[in-house]
Each structure stands twice: as structure tokens, then as C-alpha cells.
Length: 160
Image (tube, rainbow, N blue to C red):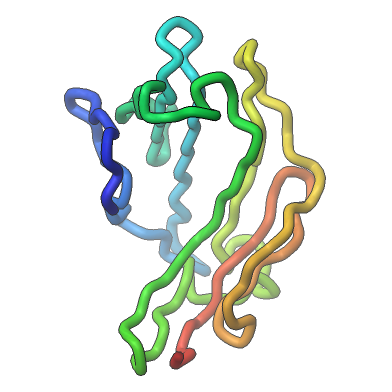
């Protein structure tokens, strides 16, 4: 992923766009827990990205506030999700574990503990659903947000 202006922290475990390995082994194996936090540094105004893989998140780098006009002050929008890419006329790959969300927790991929970090550093859980964009629900889907969590994924196999 091309992220112009992103400044990677020394010794950072990942950079934006990196593949995360190993993946969860569902339904009977180990389920990985990935934590991502993005917050504005009160002093510098830079937007820091924190990442944890089965661990407490640590800083992986930041986007300098000078890159932004609106984000120089605050964020007013939030989006999250997953994406798959396939060449034209090729089948789309699976998303998440490859199971549809109706497979349930422990089978489908999930977002949990969804929250917004306020200017004081307090996290407020996201309890209301967001609008969704699913290109083809025969291949991938997502559930509504319920108690700061949702399930997503699917087997893929669609051809454009």
C-alpha cells in the first residue's frame, strides 16, 4: 500500500499495507487478535498508528499533521473494513477466514471492541451500526455492529 508521508517508527513490526502472518486457524485452532489504534498526539498534532498482534499495541509510525487540512484539527469521520483484490476475469479470493458471518463467532472474521478515542484519550464503544458497502454479498458480507462488534468475511469466488 502506498502511504505517502507516513513515517515509520524505528523497529516497527509492520507498515500500512503489510500482510499479517500467521492467520487464525479456524474453527478449531488458535484465533489471532489484532489491535489497531489511530490517535492524534496532543503535543505534535501528528496522527499515530498503533498495532498489536496478540499483544498490547505499540507505535508503528505516524502521519504528520502537515499532510492534512481537516485532520490537522480533528477527525470527523471513521471507516473500517476488509478488502480483497482480484484481476479482472479472475475469481475473488476469500475474506477473513473464508466463512460467511452467519458462521458465527470463532468461524467468521470479526471486529471487536470497536471504539472512538476522544481528545482526552478515553475510548467510547461504537454501539450504533454504520452504513456498509459490500460489492457482492454472494461472496462476502458483514453483520451490523452489535455491542461494539461485527462479523465479516466470505468464501469469495465472484468474477467481475
